[in-house]
Structures are given as C-alpha cells and as structure tokens.
Image (cartoon, rainbow, N blue to C red):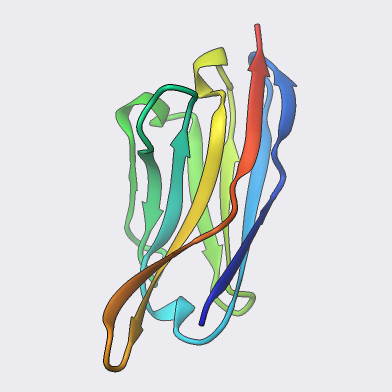
Length: 121
C-alpha cells in the first residue's frame, strides 16, 4: 500500500511562484514514474508533468512548458513541482500520483488527496 500526501498549495498572485511537494510512503515508489495532474472546476483532470524513476526524463503539458519544473528525491520518496510565472488559468486542484508495480496486481497508480492552487489576477 502506498500513501501520498501533497503540500504547498495556496493563494498567489499572477506572476508568482509556488512549490508543491508530494511525499510517498510505501515500497516501490522510487522505481517508477511519478507526477502531477490538475483539475479545474468543470474540467477533466489533465496531466501537468511526469518524471521517470531516474529523474532524467520529464514531460510537461504544453500549457506549462517553460514555467513549471518537476524533480524528485528518491531517498525521500518525494516529488516536487516548481511553478513559476503562474497564471489565473493554472488555478486548480493539483494531484500527485505514483506508479507502483505490485506482485499479483501489475502496475498500479496511487493518488494523493489533492492540494488547491489559486492564482488571482
């Protein structure tokens, strides 16, 4: 069983920055991809950023490229999302996820509870 806890959300003015953290407990988290999704009211959940287990490969939604970075600390089982030059359209609940391979189940995706990010204009 894997448990994810996000932190770092809040209210910020447009142009500001926030850093989200997601701490994972449980085994196997460091061996697979982790990342962030977000969901704004009335919208579907969308992928924001992913990072592979090594941290070498990252992917970002076009809407956040050049403004957001993702990193991870496998020793701490933690993934971070640095968000710069925030825009009102970045307002959403941000969810952390982790892919974990479990014997008998295969690859499973675990989710955090979400953290609210609100960007005021």
